[in-house]
Length: 320
Image 1 (spheres, rainbow, N blue to C red):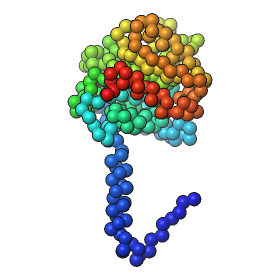
Image 2 (image 1 turned 30 degrees about the vertical axis):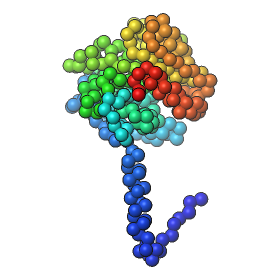
Image 3 (image 1 turned 120 degrees about the vertical axis):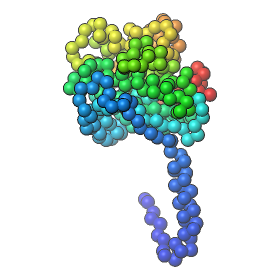
Image 4 (image 1 turned 180 degrees about the vertical axis):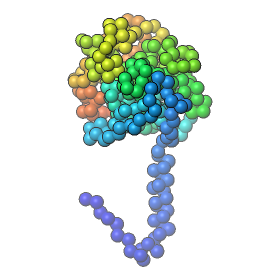
């Protein structure tokens, strides 16, 4: 039960200074505890590969996963800075999932950014374009173009945003994990105009219940069909299957997945880990007995897998 505070005119006249003082402290604490936030477009003017002008995004609220956004044709990056910004902080670009048809922009975006801010990490939430043949010249490559542009912008503005240009990582969830892995394996090919490929390699990858493969046996067909439509060949499948593109020199990888994931098979993470190990790529994997897809069961809680992730970042030298 919520108890309402009854204040009479006399009480207000006597105690108004104290009341105003307490309110100012409360408001000040709320303001100071909020991370600095700024959303900026990824590209000047119409993004490359777009056939149409901006269309209205579709935004809705879901009781399970919070805010969702779809029909994205204008990509942006939202900057979340820690309350006390230190020069040379690590940066993490967060890539929400949603099967390449929507984005879990709050649960797998902004909330994660705020958690990272508490640990002194500057976070960037990527709102990437969602593939559609009606809007784009080549639907399959548009999300990767957006992520490469985000990596380029963060590295280009490292001094301005007080981040370490050699500690820029990607954190992808589900289909966002697939997109992060694409950037981590195809970094020597620039898919955006006038950006050299030597600016596009992330320093590390954090993949949470990621879609890795587009194969018939273990791949997530929904993500595959949304990204590629249903017209694809074996060569295209191989290009978009992360486990087939692992190689020496690629970024180190942290993996977290639930054994009982009913949406993306745990074999996605296991096959990727084995491929990384065979190529000598630094990797760490955490398989949890329960949690379902996206750890929606809150088992393990976010603090558990996030704590392991932060320890991994420290052990690898990206987080002091």
